[in-house]
Length: 102
Image (cartoon, rainbow, N blue to C red; front, top):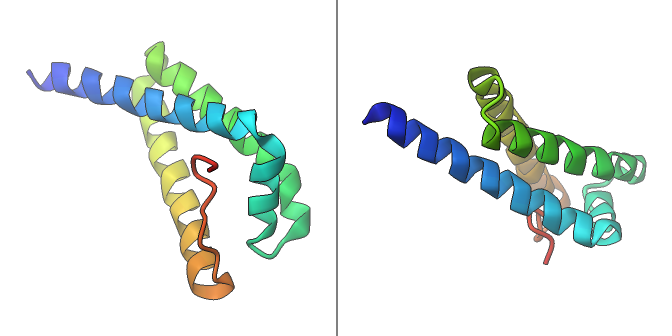
């Protein structure tokens, strides 16, 4: 039963990463503009890298490749993005994280 729940969670997280990456890729320039709101114009060059990382993590989760390692990397990725968003809210007054690009 635990294995089945873990497999379902892995698929759901993979799909969330995939949808997020697709949404950002769909309107790439808007996502780069949102990244600029965080106060580092030069950091917008990493917007495509974020999309690529999310796509790779999603594919690896959905294809069940190195699941434990990828799950750990995905958790740290989400934690890192969460800290960046917290910084944007508290310090820069950003109201849109750009997570799924509106």
